[in-house]
Length: 447
Ligand SMILES: C[S@@+](CC[C@H](N)C(=O)[O-])C[C@H]1O[C@@H](n2cnc3c(N)ncnc32)[C@H](O)[C@@H]1O
Picture 1 (cartoon, rainbow, N blue to C red):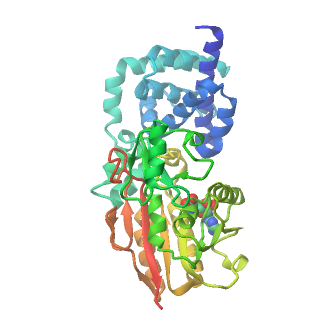
Picture 2 (cartoon, protein in one colour; picture 1 turned 90 degrees about the horizontal axis):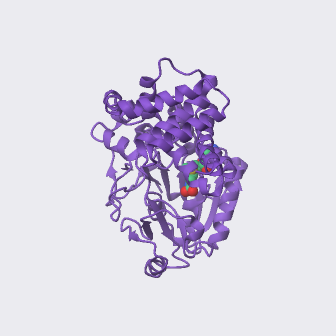
Picture 3 (cartoon, rainbow, N blue to C red; picture 1 turned 135 degrees about the horizontal axis):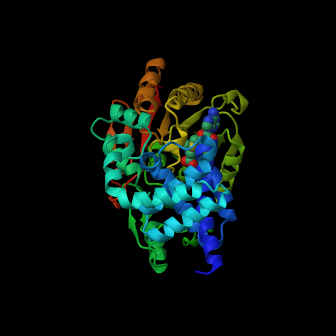
């Protein structure tokens, strides 16, 4: 190999190690951290940096269980850079088809590049020992469910308590690579025409009958390569998220509030389905609100877009009631771990209390804005009962003028309140990976 190629590939491991360190040490999300590291990567390395960053975070808890067995003593916090590179090395050996000699060599070179010379023989020893003792190490790591399924212990326990019959299936689905699902814009195209464009572009795909306008591509592609993307013919949105707009049952002329709207996926879907809607989209995060505006612009849609706290309507509400409210609430995102594997590391058990309190506050603050006879759709991408079924039970107990009106459906499972999709649930067209985990409950204000 030429020295240049050597340097570039070692650099990919260095960058991937940097991604992992920033997520684990600084508590920043992959989506915040990754773009900066990708900017530093040579074009040919970007795919590898992304694959290693996502892969290590997806399997982190299992990789750490292996690493614990391979180290005589744990590394210190100040040496997280080395720990991250060792995880990058183990990930390549355990979960990729990168040739083992290249994985070891390039990772050790990345360790050398940190300037911590003591760590070079350590990295060599750890990675080579893993190759020799893989079966025994895996057997030990298989003993604990958290290590076996590569999740934090608190989450395994919570899922086991909430889903005694399904928890292992949920954990396994969380470790899958997510499907790449599109929503065809009903205003600018239709499924037959758009599918013909996908065929012409050589993009194999399947229709998702559980959705109105969803197709799943066999291979993910950069959005710019999708036929008609710039012209607003299509958006990327999981099948589970595509169920929100039909459930909201919006009709032309209605005044609709999307209370936690950014980046605008469901806002856009509501507007695509039903022309003549007066929609107000609110989100607390100004940077994310700009993404709503970009999305609407690309799709040729319009709405009143506001930066505001949905729990403080006095800041932004003009006093005219809404006939429909979508509350796609901030949540633990435990239903979309396969898309955001950093959630396993970033979310803490105590966050669930804080989130559940914030969700209850949002529900209570928005309820008075709903016209009698109107519908509020509460949605989360969580699979935890406290944020979902229990949240709605408590809301109904607090509000005598609320009735549940969640319809029967051919997806997910009915709970005492609402319907739950678990990650991997069949989407009717791509059973191998299925849908994201989502919860929906529809509430009607008694006229
Ligand atoms: C699950 S995301 C919404 C996704 C969006 N509905 C879509 O389909 O594209 C939750 C959003 O709630 C916003 N949020 C959190 N707390 C909020 C609050 N108090 N008021 C308004 N928005 C809030 C977050 O900024 C985040 O954009």
